[in-house]
Length: 314
Ligand code: CP
Ligand code: NVA
Picture (cartoon, rainbow, N blue to C red):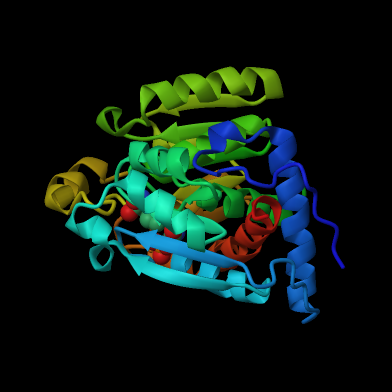
């Protein structure tokens, strides 16, 4: 049976910020082990009889299915809790919801709008709370991103990542995760779509300690030259649908097409957290092309989150 470290039991995973590089390394090592076990169909029932509740206030394909399947592969069960079906949707507080759900569940995943709501749930929960995406961050995605980059390139330190498009939740978590591992991260966005200044400042501070770098630019071409990873995400995130037309106009020129990939050099891989919008932030040819690692990246959500659950659930 695979050995699981005990020191992270009970920990929340509400933001990349709160996990040290050592904690994240422990998680990535376990994720690789669990992936190998799953590939060879060897049982690894690390969480028998445990229950995970997943509160969704926004839609999801990958997060929902990977957590649900992951929990079942670990010997536990997962419940999909649509916020509109919970009393939360009728005004029950997050505090009371957390206190009650902690009596039934062994961990809670929440996908919502405000990061503060995840923190509030975590404050009142007796079981670990995992951030399944907020407007500000997507830490579970960053775990799969790190895992995929390491699998493909054999290292994290010194890897040059060019993130293109909207400096959103996915960008923020990847930037900080990259900074913890000494990556050279550049976000190429229009001025008005730069990642949130407080996160940039934090990532820059963290990068100083790890030997990494964090840069911002509005020159997409310059950013991709010599990059090992080209990363993008949708231009219109969940909850921003009213801004779609403006965003399409403002972000034109920051999409990844074959010409831009060629600019990066032969070593570069392409990542996208998905879902993708062909012809906006990425072309269909690139997403399904030889340089794309997005399907491995999507699969790695499963392995990385299983490692997370195995580490934090008691
Ligand atoms: N990347 C990601 O979180 O996908 P879902 O919205 O489908 O969960
Ligand atoms: N930035 C996107 C990510 C989707 C997984 C959103 O928030 O909608």
